[in-house]
Length: 431
View (cartoon, rainbow, N blue to C red):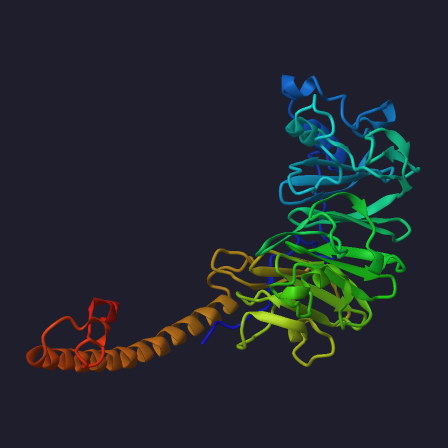
């Protein structure tokens, strides 16, 4: 019997008697203003090595307006081995490892600049600019480019999706599958590594309001509440079966059957959505019950499935009246749900404190009871299995002894006509 999935309340923000979170203050009783993201990035950056200082004004850094942004940072996302940021003007910047085209720009164009130097210095993503000016992907020079005022971004291990203020979507990079790299486009014959931003034809007629990403798949939510998914679907991330001979179909965004979504979250190999009726849905890989479901049918959730404890329409709903899910985040084997009242619910793997519950918490005690019940049940099964195994081995030894008395030669390959002979590999393991 597998352990049950349990959604439990975990640590919440410190609250005052009025129920609101208490802001921290200085000794003088005044609020201490937190530094902006740009200040943190600027102050925490170590001095560049001499090799990089020699090249820090090369590559895409072609004019004063194209220097590393002096504006505030609005959005910052981290991929596998790279970083993407959007500054207050809507300009996209990237740095990190570009082996899999994750930076949205070419870093090997100038042979006089080492690629690792070009990768490590923040520079503009090519082909896009908030005012229609930017870096031309073909020449690397300042030129007219697609006007694109970026407002949101998300990233997988080595691919990015960004949204404009008009709901336009652009994508670049590459996906990974069990057979290697996959393009971010479904067009036959395109490169498996897309170094500059491209539009996705299947989504070009929609205004996109939100995007989310797992390890190697994307979700896009339209302003009408329609949800699309594309990428690597080997762990049921896309809610559709992908035939091996039609693997390019996985790269074409298709609708999921959930109506009127308002919140989406893609995680490593599973995803969540919350619809307008405050029902939560999950699909994908579920090896550690990180889905919040008590499933006994395997570790794949191949269709969007309602989570009873987090769905207003279900009798087992644990959400208080008037309280909604406002944010979802997760690791590979556990998930967390932030509620509008400040509470946090968690589910999934908890043997390393992942969901913030102490060992003496009632839920953890229940799980321990289940573990003990499972151990007792399994011990009885092992006793029965070992007894059957011992009888089988005794019969085989008896047959071997009888065959040895009447026959000569080696018994391997059934040469003696006495059936399979016992050997050391047949013996039961010592428990």
